[in-house]
Length: 87
Image 1 (cartoon, rainbow, N blue to C red):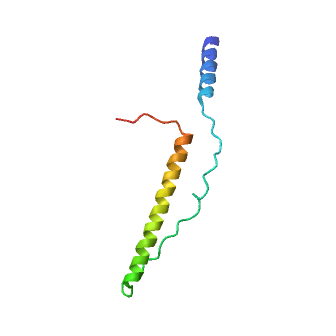
Image 2: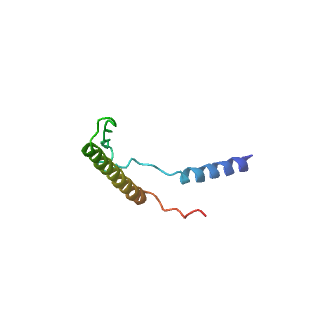
């Protein structure tokens, strides 16, 4: 009975040692601000200039999102251990 209790205590101690400790990490600045979503022009009254402005604003919003994703990827690679690719 003592041997079982001793083995249980040893295994619990080993498990407690392997638990990772997580600490809060500061999020890079600018990632929490909302991205401006362009307003879609009215299809009945939109001019070519309105459509062009909408497409430019949409492109800028996508570029902002892609830049943020790049920052998040670089930031997470710095804080996470790389893993082997799964086949």
